[in-house]
Amino acid sequence: MEFPDPAEPWGLAAAALLCVNLFAFGAFAWDKAAARRGAWRIRESTLLGLALAGGIFGALAGQRLLRHKTRKEPFRTKLYSIAGLQAAIALLLAVPQSRTWIFETVARAAG
Image (cartoon, rainbow, N blue to C red):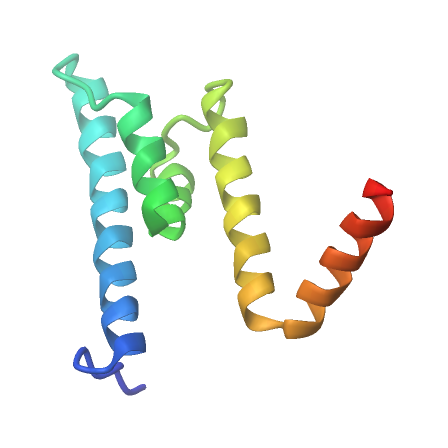
């Protein structure tokens, strides 16, 4: 596997996404360890913000692998909503036909 060249625009974006995902996973690990010790915790809004900033894979991996905040509502619903939103955005960017279909559907619904 070859890593993207950070000098290229897509390479820089890939490197940034890798970093934010590692940071999100680390935040979940830190918060889990703090919860076990009864120490200072990371705010849920911060964890969700990291996911929203592009760290959704790290956040979901942290949640699943560390078994952290798996039953906590509404946190879980918000995290999965962020994942769905980012999946929809990725689909819009990756598949030009999806943009046309969505815009036509919205236009028909609007009137």
